[in-house]
Image (cartoon, rainbow, N blue to C red; front, side, top):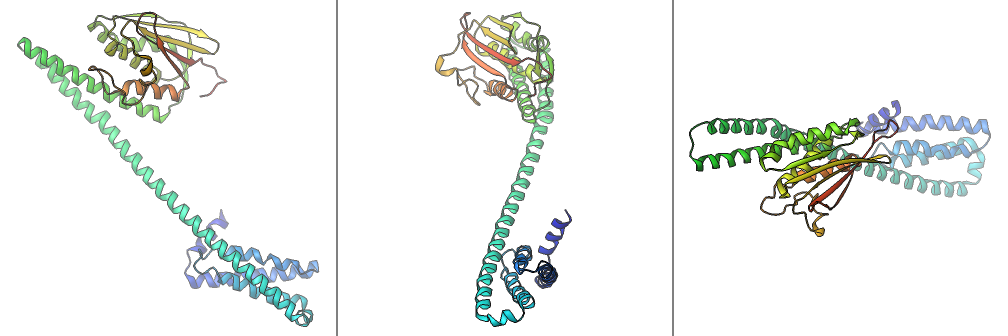
Length: 356
């Protein structure tokens, strides 16, 4: 961490300070390399000049990256002279050619490192920009979801309350019918807000644990019982004793499937059953309604899919799909022997060894 901080500080220096800092680094390196060559009795440690070259080239971000190469070339000349002495001058042309080759090598290395630093800096800037934009989007989404869940839902409930008060007044049959439709639309709006809230919960991926399946199914049925009675629909239950992996969102999965049959299936019977197979609990929800064609069975869970005059927002079954996807639940759609649609929901049985 200390080295990283030092390196970042060096890159933020003025050009003059970078020059001085680079010279100091090469002087320290030259002294170390010279004594290493003496102790090892070989000139090969001079090649270690690539280390201070690589270090200082990163300071300049490609703008002045030839300066470290000049320093490295000068250091090689001085170290070669100090170590080889008279031999260096006796073979001056060979020494000069060697210096020229290494000078070109140093220049190439310095430019390469400088360009790599430029690319790295650009990538870092782009990454920070994207992270900042992502945070802004998430904050805006959080604000809008809060606005939707609290403010808008509260206002919808206030409207619903006033409509209920209006129902208690002396209204004509026509006015009562219009009022009933207004209350239904308000309820649908509140349900839509609740579905969007649950979609947000799915995105948050809350921790899963042990859940009693029968309790969840009973809660889901209770949530839709009044609506089923209004349409004279019987809900037949046959639950099994099974504990599964999940959380409260599973109730929303079952509730939306039951609601879909009540609202769209044109049925008078919904049957919910459960059985265990290997490490799975399989819940079956079926009805004796109109069913759907085979070519549309794969479409019903797609976002925004609608069919018929009674079609809603399409978000309910999309929510079912998202919950299923996040909790490794398999949905199998087929025709029911009752005459309508049948959906098998395969859920992992609870196991302390199994993690989602």
